[in-house]
Length: 237
Image (cartoon, rainbow, N blue to C red; front, side, top):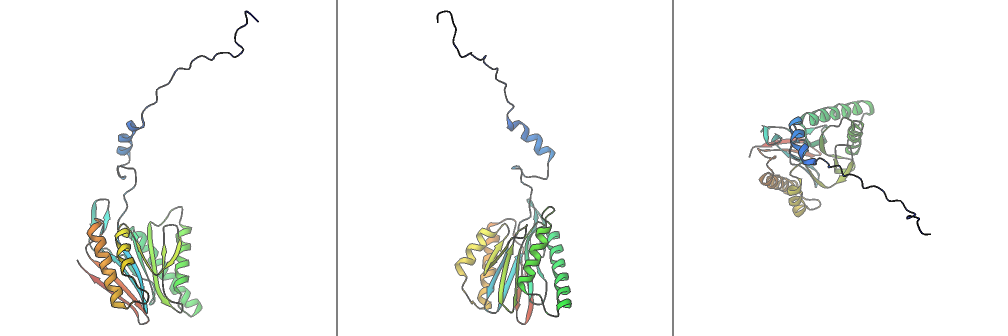
């Protein structure tokens, strides 16, 4: 087989094309999108919002500070709302979205009572809110929500995220101060604890979060729900 070359042809070496480094596009992108933080994540308002079940009712609480990025927009924002005489909601997120959601829930609960002749249960109100949030999933209401109240099933709270995921629990915390607040609540929570102990625990949890979370502060709104109705309290720090 003399005079015959190799059976496998050799391919010509391809010229390497230099790639543009991705880091060079970052400054231009940040200039085009000034409403985003340096890491590309949109600025979101912070909050510390908690809910606790006690013997005979539910307590919901949230601090008052309203922020946008590093700017404090208000020191008197309200993030806890009354829905019925036995149901309340506490939120963390955009104040406007909280207000829209709370007003819609209040209207739907009143319509339910007029149609059926009985008050809406906490489970039904939570499920209705979950459906509202899920139906808005393509244009979501930017809010995490705790629904709490008292009905024939007893004292219950439910936690909902932006898309309407529904989780029942005995205590909960949402917002930017969640990590600190939930640690305090887990350390001090007990089943069937009295109202005064539950209130002290909630205040201690929110204050602990305020000390470590710059997006939370300036006071505390509390809603206490019992068989006698809803009592709203407000405290400035």
